[in-house]
Image 1 (tube, rainbow, N blue to C red):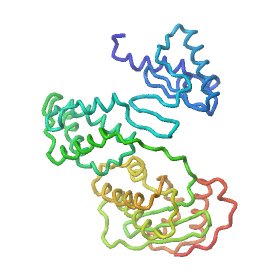
Image 2 (cartoon, rainbow, N blue to C red):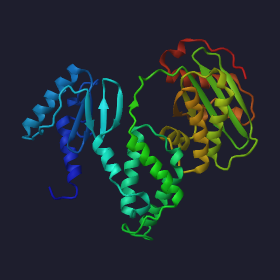
Image 3 (cartoon, rainbow, N blue to C red):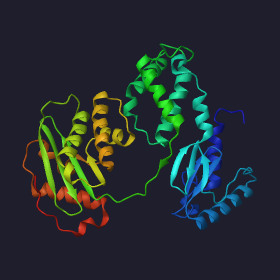
Image 4 (tube, one colour):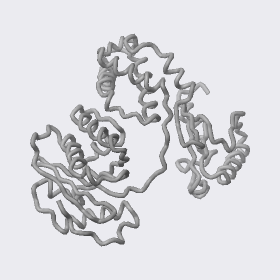
Length: 348
């Protein structure tokens, strides 16, 4: 179309044809069990075969009514297909990078010979691929930090887009290791979502840390203590509280659980797999190593300080029935049927 906003315009048009509720009234939306994804001129419809077939017909009618051509690459009822550089395999519940995406990564120049503009493109592809393959970025912290510093210099006008990236050799080594992982393109198997059978709720303060463990059985446990070495940052302290809690409850942890923290920086970094802080990254690496060694799947969630039952423990206060009720209410809210049981007394 020759206009710089063309992708955005096409995204809106395609979303309207697919009836995405960000641009179309919910009255015309697809059934709740149908999921629609749109990227510029690509549409993906997922759900049961009958629902998808029905909604595909509706999308085709919408396109025909506004004289839009849908192209010849349409795949109806496909269980294996490529979308946004990702190869989806619904038969085996797996995802991997498309061959085209891997070839584009393999064709990129060596990291030690890039301009800043090339470095930005390469880094963005690396991060996208890492998310698809579920690769935690903590191990590549110094590569990402070096890229961020060079882009910061670009934004401040210190260097130009065509200036050499000049990444440190250590960062180059990590980046090339990440590239090798992407080129190997090991399939990521998507496990069915399991209901968490326990929750750990943690808190940190300048004085120490506290944690409450609430399993489905209702046999609540608590742990906590003063810092042996005081953390420098509060988010580092919050991450350390999680690590110490996992160690304290290691003998009774289930394979699937929720971890509740009252620090949004930790919550975001833990679910994303990376942090800008090296201190936080170090703690996260230890937490992930613990999970991996025991095959534990954990999801991090946020709890307000006022509703955190571990708040008093981290400040060396006695764990009360009110604290127990807070933990019970939190667990009940995250696990529907859990509220019908009577809690047992908390033990440390």
